[in-house]
Image 1 (cartoon, rainbow, N blue to C red):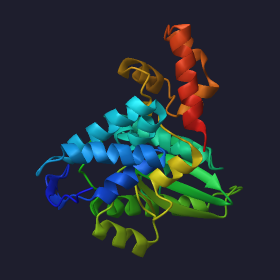
Image 2: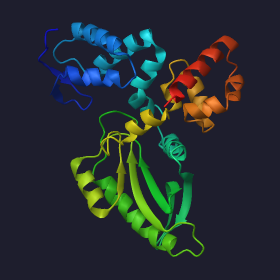
Image 3: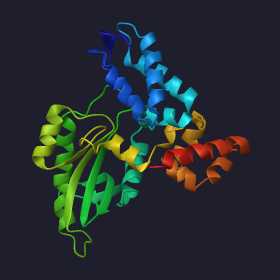
Length: 280
């Protein structure tokens, strides 16, 4: 294969050098076989041209994966599917709580906590191993927007306000507290530096390395309902409105498919898709 040397346009509008390895790795993360990855890389490479957008490359690769096997396409569209949880951040908070729940945490969503100065509504409270994790989520509904230093600055001040009253509670069932910042995009360098300096736990799409949000979802098979290639947008919204944010939840509560009036044949295919996505 002839190596192509040219710039492509990222979602931020920046130009960057095209990397066939990045394309190959993104396809591998879908679970596609080695041969299928090579076939798709060859087809996509044949259609590339200078100044093509990353969105166009993604759309072509996604279509080829979907044609080969829908579960590969579902996993490939994970990042886009998380954006589709929006436009508000509430389903994302539910999603993070779900990921943590299936990781062994006891979780609560949108809890009012009294601080030293004012009351705060905390996105997610998660308990595990004697630590109460106080989690704030920063959701972006479109690509290209990163989490800058203002976010951990603001969240750290909120955490400082509530941690004293929480730790001074009588009969509390935790020994320590920890503040978290979770985003579905990425942290800027300053945001990472500040967050680590003040002791916040930072979780983004690809941070910590090897244990970022994408890694956890893939490892545990905890995909959002929006990755489905078989459910319509209306059906996905119906489920989100009822706090069904994970494919695993739908697999456990299949009666929602009956409420949607889905035919038996289509229902069987959706159930197969859910089972495939829940395998970790």
